[in-house]
Image 1 (cartoon, helix red, strand yellow):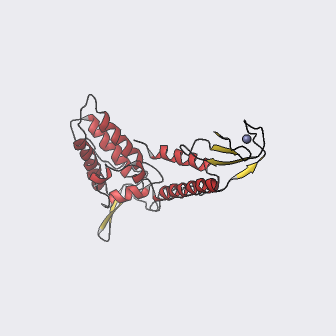
Image 2 (tube, protein in one colour):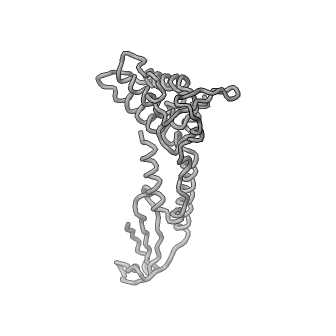
Image 3 (tube, helix red, strand yellow):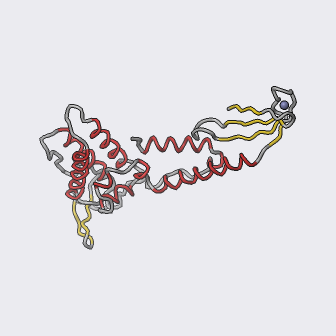
Length: 240
Ligand SMILES: [Zn+2]
């Protein structure tokens, strides 16, 4: 399974190969931590009731340790470690109380635990899936994913089956869609527009009246293929 980071790199590569998209926006939403509650002088974490929702105000960066949360729920160290990692992802910039987040972390782990055959000696699939989920949860630019889970809009059983693409922040999804569209447009434009040039010499008749067009034939990060046709003798060839 690909992580968001890998996918982002892929987006960057596609950008480079798509000149029209080169000046596109840099995806940066949510760069700051929400420390707008630090004017409080209370040294300990507090839980305020705002409306019907309990709002957790953390004193410093949140994680299981700082929140005073015990993640040793099972006899199994691997499972406990996973729950802690999930908790540490879910709590980033969150205002949800620890008990809510711990319950979610427990549910997510349990869903994967039941979906994959857990085996302490070779827990590869279990570990792989959870590594992917955790790394997506921890993405700085993806508070949407955390919020959806923490607010109950995205259920653990649905979350564990999501692809990295589905977990990606909306901004990144839009960016990729735009690049896709542009690449498609460029490719179509290239097939319709044939340019005649004297840059190429026909190997058969040695004339320099060659029309050509360029096309992205394989993946977007590979060089363009140039298709040539000699306007004199009809000889065709290609190179990339
Ligand atoms: Zn020719």
